[in-house]
Amino acid sequence: MVKKLFLTLALVTVLSHHCTLAQIMNRHNLKVLITPRVMKNDSVYIYQYKILNERGSLQRFEVIRLEVGDFYQRDGGSLGKFFDPKDWYGWFSNSVGQPIDSSAKGIVMWVTEDSISNYSGLMVPARSSLAPGDSVTLSFESKGLPSIKRFWAAGWAKPITEQEYDSLLTLGYSHSDIFKSWYEDAYKGITIAPQLPQRPFNTMVFLDTLISYKHQAFALGWLKNKKEERKDEEGEEDDTILKKLDKHLDKTRKELVKGDSTKARKELEKFVKKVEELYKESMKEEKKVKPEKITITSEAYTLLKYNAEYLIDRLPKKKGEKDDDDKDKD
Image (cartoon, rainbow, N blue to C red; front, side, top):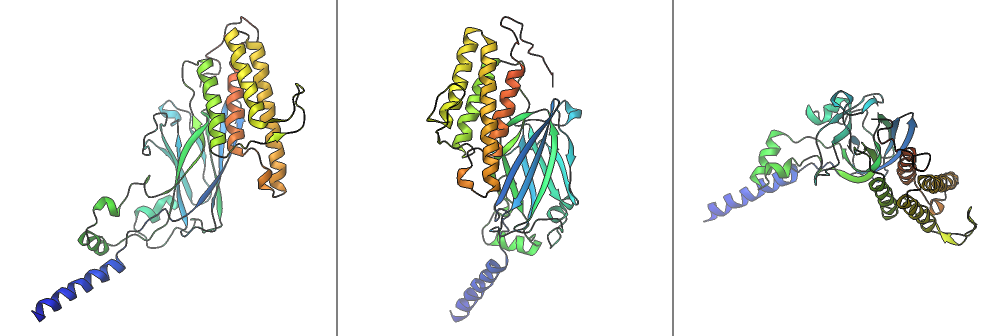
């Protein structure tokens, strides 16, 4: 009886020892801030991302995946010209995150030093991985319009050994518990990334998309609502930012329903002008380090400006003129 009790205690001690040494190495113990910037060059958009591994992160940052609605040029898409900083490598993969977004074609991803710390079993993080407080800027080109997409960021974790793996199995963990999928074991967020426009182009459907983007930008905190005490071009004052933007979009719809694309274009141009004014003011407040006064972020600015301009470019310039749906075929 004493011998049996001793063996039991010994087994518990061994298992406890393994439990202490063999731990599942999670890669989501970090916090990443992505600041996107989009610039247009003819029919191509340059998507640039400043990625900051925030100071409160518990891991070095080494992998970023951005959901995109586009794919490589050689396969009929428009993705290209990846900018890779020293010892960072970017490419497109047709892998998609879960739950599946039907509009997504895959992901654009960057890894440190060809991801050697992820796949070759090295026991130290890559030299180009980002310590908390460090940042990196990455970019690529696409003909896809700015849209709301997800991102997944992963930090470095020491790879487990074969012995540790066996120990975890002994403790009751499954293989899927130990090695989670990349879209599960990651710091997740929302950003701006390209989406190829639907073909054939439908004016009213696209306007609905633009209106939806405006609502989502507000829900995500990218667009803030406040009362503006100064008069606008139409002499109206004391309206909130959202009301002013909504009025332009509502008037655009009414004019399109009546078949007057000229007036619809003018309302959209006023919408774009308002977005640009808000962004210019917000950038001034950002330089003054007054985040509470920022009303529109780079995400909302990019989303609303470029999608509205895309719609403007596809409206007939004269009432009754045939709409060139195939303008600037991407």
